[in-house]
Length: 107
Image 1 (cartoon, rainbow, N blue to C red):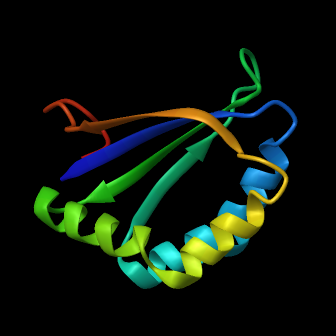
Image 2 (cartoon, rainbow, N blue to C red; image 1 turned 30 degrees about the horizontal axis):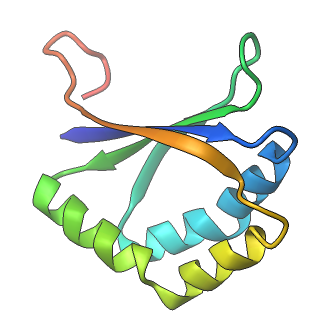
């Protein structure tokens, strides 16, 4: 099992718009596409303009294929463009692939 960690550095004042996009369109489209979200986190102490989340994958090759297909999905492209009509929602992002340790409760 592999976990994909993503950290989004959100443009100041745009977090609610990003969260709405995830809740109303991105996550439902992910589920249709075979992308499995595990958890989303936002800081209560620290930088409020950061969104963290984890995705779960069985196979890294399948991950690549799934992401490539999702990135060009017409519904996703249209939704992303519409949600960014007033400018980008992100300043940047970090992406890592994680593997649980032997002693991790999350496998």
